[in-house]
Image (cartoon, rainbow, N blue to C red):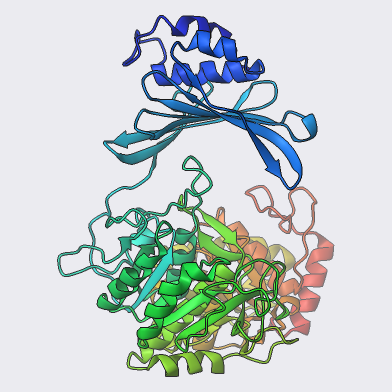
Length: 615
């Protein structure tokens, strides 16, 4: 929608300098911002600006240059009451692309930002609320600069909670969103329940996830993603979050001392820069704490950091592991750094499931997230062997690596760190009940899968019984009787109740790796996040124990149809779909898709007999 604002300029002089006009009028700050945008849209005439804002002081235009090319200009406007605005006109090669106004109050607190297209349509508008000198909320605004969505907290208090148990791990990053339950429940706290982390950027006890270097209106969120990977792959981690001291990196001395006093054994450092002088204090103090392992990122510049160093990755510390991201083949991922003199490990860090700042699942890629996976591995190792020295811990991790292709790192490649050091999880798996189902021995073409219900995952036995009966009605149209052999109830720790390849390996090892099995789990950690997953011959070659298993989540829609669909995949030993309306094997299961064709049934019986799935 195009918003016309030129009338605001003439009306502005009628408003008082401070306060608000009538209830249906915009505040002075918003009026000024919109009127300034109108002037900018008209080419920004100095005389018109001074007439619109009596007492206005204009700064000199500043050319915006990239290389040898001028791509726009910037200018500051100082209003009579001390408020000011920065205006920009972005026009590479003379082609207008964007107009912007950033407005700040007399105390230089950023209040409003407006971005507009060349036709002066506002594309983005944001505002910041304050409590005294502290920013409290970031708001998304409409074309009239009124709030249009829920406020985003900027530095909220940390919710009360209990101390998490487990390995104490520090994350030096942009902070974390500790309002999210997945993060809040894993925070390390003192005897009074106060969290142990700290914000060494703002120097307060609220290390909330925000990296506003590019713009306070568009803060980058990195630490929440990093921390979510650590606590997902090492659920018994006790998290101590730090917001790194960007303004004064000598504060790293205080930060690391703080971490040591908090009992931290592992420090995740998924950040870096090209300037060694920024990391001198870190190098000095980290080297003095030989009881802490620092796991750091090699960076994402796509270069050899032996010849073009990145810090802290290129520092020579005995209590440090430098990690870069690999593709599935063990080579460095596109854009990831390498260097056999500086980088220790290659670890998959591409398309890794994480939780974003808003609490929504997302995939992330880069060396930062490969680091988080090694931190989680180290956390699991220390949970089982808490008295390991840092030297022994480092050697244990390196011993888990296999030779990597090429000469990109010194220590090798860990192809799947989530599979390693999970003895405690494996020992926690217990079969709590077994139900043997008796069936009429007459008839043929009977299909006897074993059912495994993960306790505390949103399933109960009666629900599964009904689900099986309804699914059997669908499968029976092909002359096959679905008659489960037995149902196992399996107690599992929280971190094993969701499907992932690593969890699936643990669970299949526990219940046995032979025959068709259906696992009823809580959710999935895979990306893309499918409600149900089946493994046949083709997609289980790297892990044969998963062959002929079905994994169905508690959130599955039309679960009896979804289960029949997945069991048909097992019987067919084929993962393909049809687009025929109403067919069970349609790619999108629904209540109206339950039919199987005669051809599908013939092939189903043939393949099931061939794979010894029927008797």
